[in-house]
Image (tube, rainbow, N blue to C red; front, top):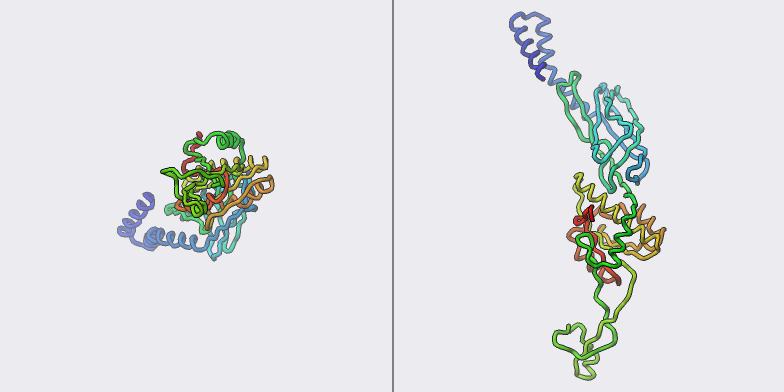
Length: 334
């Protein structure tokens, strides 16, 4: 820009002092360069079409997957010096095509086949974020986001972290911020005793009172159940790196626990929010595989914040222990 301003000043002085055809041609060429370059860049924004996709709907975290980028010049004027950029914190291209610039003839289409590696589990935008365009001499330079980003669903890695967690769930009801373990209220049985001050009226045996006119309360009947109900309180994804990292650790913990129950063929009921409270029972390798490859994309796609009472009301109808798994309270060191 400094060189351009210097040329413009020199051309103005030259045309004022000397005049002549060449001086005027040079002056107007310099004067009109920026407006014409700006119009050229607007043309690029209108004519350039960018498409990208992965071959699979689900991507494994940290694994190179097939990726394709299609660039098309839909207009009648050549396009040059197009470079692409992406978020290196979440996406990695082993053969980085963004280090080179692309040039397209009128109505030309270029296809780039590459590999993409997604660093974190979850659902988010990955791949190319946008492109940079400039004029011939690089005086004007602008960035533009792609109209249709690529949405990936990245499966988390299954680790052995679940073994320690399961031990806590089975033997310890004080699990800090990560888990809250409680046992539902016991069902009332047929055994009774006389009413004492402070007893809940909900436990009064009213049929017996109608016969004897004496107040008796029903005693709770212990019910054993191996079922564990896990309530997933997921947060709203805001697209920031921190939220993506948090979701990655959250899902890794979740699938590791689910895989443990599936392989041991012990029942685990998952409650999550997805256009209402949904539930799913994992009790075999087959049900875990279905959860891992199909339902996991729905878990966390809708925030459960604000729906906790609704979820707990639904899960309270089930027998067994209830685990509240809050994404916001997850601590990587726990």
